[in-house]
Length: 254
Image (tube, rainbow, N blue to C red; front, side, top):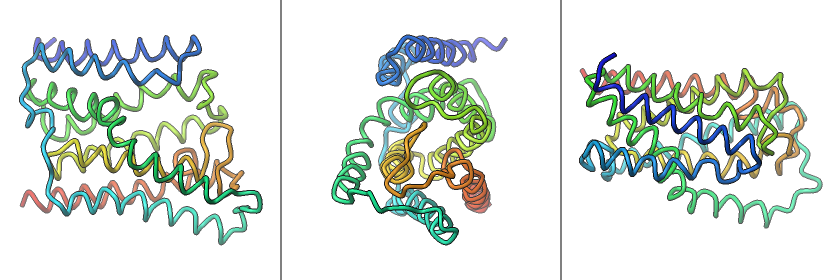
């Protein structure tokens, strides 16, 4: 094994083990928090610069992409569900929903920055780059690690778990989301951009579409079709966005 890969492997194994243990013992609401001290520890031990970690401001247009992606994609999915008659907002409290969306989209930037984005597209990204891995390798393996880290949350009794038949689709979508946020990280050079996109996605997705067994404000029950993270429509649109961003990145390198 390449010795330069050892910290990356050790960090990912530790993150998955700790989070899985917390998810299995009733502490799933806090299970992402250990990513923060793990990131800080490995960052200190490996002495990365802020630029390597991605703690730099990306270009303004990248933030436009980061916000437009969840707004447009989640809007398209909602429109598809509405057209099919799958939306029921008869019992929706829109004041509460809008407030939740605003709070999650704004305060969530800091939370995902110090946990999921800081770990996977911050420290792990830097660790793989230092180990001499290519941009494509880093993009793919940070996304796969991100997906595996989520397995316990959606398969154990955590409150975020999904029906067994939706787990495979969720894992595909989680990988696509990881690729999209990773592509934004590559395009911008900034993990901040990826964190903004991640937070806005969560802030719109969960209040409107729900999570686990919970139905969101749009009242969509056919989540296996219209769920942005557990539905086939979500796979289709996320795949299209990932392909478009990959094309943009490839074009920028020419």
